[in-house]
Amino acid sequence: MVLAVNIAEPAGQVKEYLVKHKLTFSALLDNDSRVSDLYRVRGTPSRFLIDREGRLIAGSIGPRDWASAAARNLISYLLGLAKKPPRG
Image (cartoon, rainbow, N blue to C red; front, side):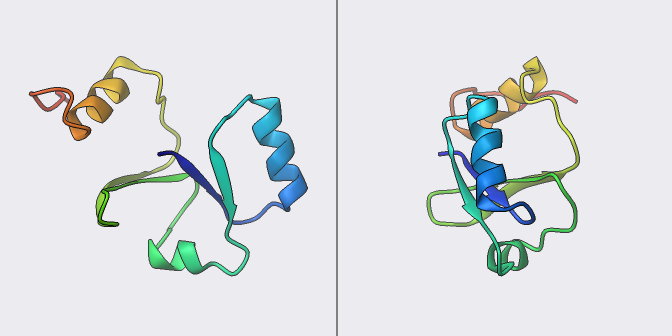
């Protein structure tokens, strides 16, 4: 599951962004910073991979090219779809 968490913009602006970019995942509005505090967000954009039990298994801060081969390989490995960890 992919879930965006927005910490700054109002609901209308978030919805407009999702529609404009044809994003199909949900967005949570973290107006009271509960989610940001829980995961100790230190910068944006931040990404977290959380397992089915709610445990943090990976994270990164800053822009990333999630369409790159390296990113796809990492996600495949973390999902158990690839047997070898990605290089680099």
